[in-house]
Amino acid sequence: MIPLVAIIGRPNVGKSALFNRLVGKRHAIVSEVYGTTRDALSTVIEVKKKEIELVDTAGIMSLYNHNDPLLQPVQEQAKEVMDQADMILFLVDGTVQLTNDDIHLADMLRKANKPVVLVVTKCDHEKVKHEQSEIYKLGFKNPVFISSLHNRGIDELLERLIQELKKLGFFKREAHKKKTGVPEVSFCLVGKPNVGKSSLFNQLLQKSKAVVSDVPGTTRDALDSELHYGDMIFKVIDTAGLKRPGKVEQGIEQYSVLRAMRAIKRSDVCLLVLDSTEKISKMDQAVSRYILNEQKSIILVMNKWDLINKDQNMMDRFLTYLQHQFDYIPWAPVLFVSAKTGENVSSILDQVYRVYQERHKRIETGKLNRFIEEITHKHPPSGTKKITPKIFYVTQVDVHPPHFILFVNTPDAFHFSWRRYFENQLREKFGFDGTPLVIEYRARTRADRF
Image 1 (cartoon, one colour):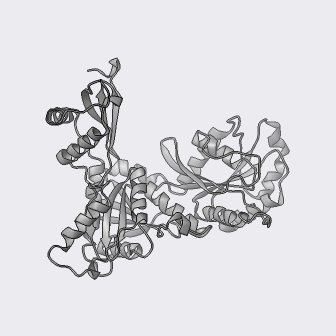
Image 2: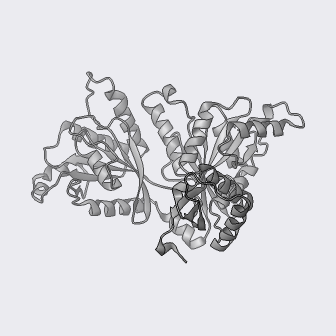
Image 3: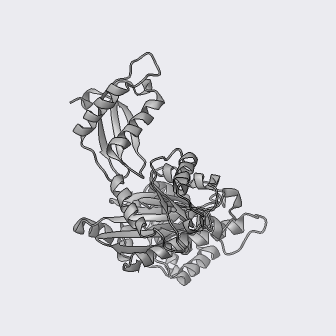
């Protein structure tokens, strides 16, 4: 479970500057203009080999500015982020006196009973610390003094952050996995509203006959539960229904979509739940493409299969239809289930684990190079320039997802169709069902030679 840490503060205290410093690049827009950050920006950072999801939010004020019609929904979204966060970085400006908004926000955080690290920003010299003794009136112990601009106090802040998250129980699962060797497989249920995701979620909990426990960080619309199924541990995430951007209202509903996107990012395998009684929509395809862009494994789940009048060839016709609608992921497995009756629901966990294994499959370099000789003999790569494309060797450099590098003479010389041919042949030979593949051409240098 990746903890969610929200950067909270009134406008113009340096939230986006800290976000950019921790991320390591200018991800958020930094401006002296109040209200620059409208939407919550989220990204995963790595601190001492531990992943943390960091969210930058709009400034929260005690009074609404009625001249700005966007202010209220923006601040509602910021408060929603605060409500869902596992930990808060509460920022105050170290160069000015505390404001009513600072005090109002401190009161909100105490009432929310959230773990809070008080961060005093813009501390560009030591004297600021002594001038800001009043910050202790906010009621939070051991503030951290930083300067995002000059990178002061950032290491101390990150160390404090890791310590506090460990106290909350995060990162223990990583140690357990290394100790026991039992993988923890994360998967989510995503799709449009009313396709039966929650019903399917509930059926999974019943059919697994498993120990179910709450996981830290559970959110209102993205529910996490842990399943012990045989020797395997699954973390299953139910999400809110996804709508087209134009159909999503500001505020809580908008953040429900953000939480669903976050669920995809922190999953190994995504179950795209579809309604068997409806045609595949552009939204269904858009969600599948988002899953693909995040390089997550995918299984198509046709729910409400009990409502279909079946004949002998019905399933084959459905599979043909799905292959046409999702022609860019022909390798995605398809399951026909009914959350209402429980039909075939018991096969979901087995299929998820099989796809998880495919996602972590590694092929020896020797086998890969014998394979590349075979397929290039049958179908030599065609070029796009006068240079004849040549492959020296291929190797798999990573899993999760599987990543292959073909060392070649000139990457630009290869026609785009040969990459597709290589992937199709690779899947036919070695599998990789349900998981995307990363395939990269790289020009061979002297250092790359055997």
